[in-house]
Length: 439
View (cartoon, rainbow, N blue to C red):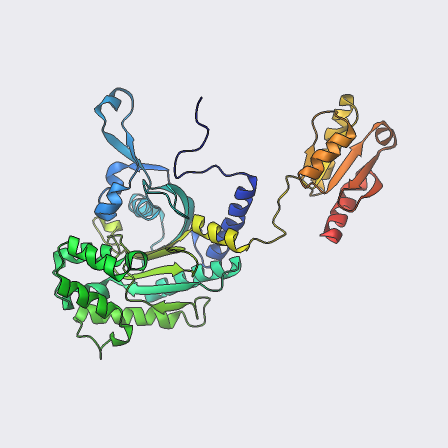
């Protein structure tokens, strides 16, 4: 027998799941558009060369490759891949459509991505990202607005205990140099440091050793990044690049005062973020009861340049929809008013011959703004009412021979156990009014 479960790390979304997802996505879109971001979509599959080499060695291993098709399939070679994130496709779009886009381009994108990762709680192989990016400016206002926008999203969803941790890749690299770690090992060291909140200090020390970094340098690095109070001009002897990074980070924090991010944002010099394309400020959002983050991002000024002969300043943030849904479900954060039934009214008939009348009545009820389900079979009325009750449909509109002859509609309110007769032309407005009164 053919297996019926979805592929490991992927899921079916039943109606309640979809309603919850659409609720969250609706808030994300509204907030992002309030900040001037425009919608964008890209294909699920990209050319393999577009994605490879953009995420570091570990990221390359998680790309879902697509075998060549037709007569080339036997070669076992891949020429396409499912998108790993929404950032690299954005960079490709900027390069390809540069003449059609404004110099300062702000976009949001909410689409699925795929990673050949090991599934875990809140981590899947197919998942949605809610990205928001600004292209064309190096101003710290860009980072401050990104932090404000994602903070506003979370506040509207009902989160109040989140923290936006911010750091700077150039500041980290300056610290690495202070600790005696040579430039060629910076990227691999940051990949290990990025796992600090997951595997702890001892785990990172072991991984740094595996990556060829001496124990003295590794210990010094972990000690320094744990002392944010020592950063800045009067603290650790940073090079000029490190000092400029510290000033940039300070400006971002100052600019978030008075925004939705105020009170939720803080510097954290243990934050590294493993993706290799980050060049400046980096951000991540965490809540206490979730291992890992609700989202993250940063500045990636060189990524578009991989597709063009010129550099384009860029910065973005990605919210993890799946993890947000997991936490909201566990905390009971979805509003009780969120629709959990397929319809407001079900139309029931005694006789199959009366179905044309039922369809016309249903059309009139829908025109009044109601969600209407027509029971398709002329079963016993009791059976039809039982079905409506089992689906949580609050009203049943009964259309029998008397109602058809008189131009009326008998409407039962199941929870209230009441019944009223309305003229067919006014039934829709009456049901809408009763829905509002009864909540």
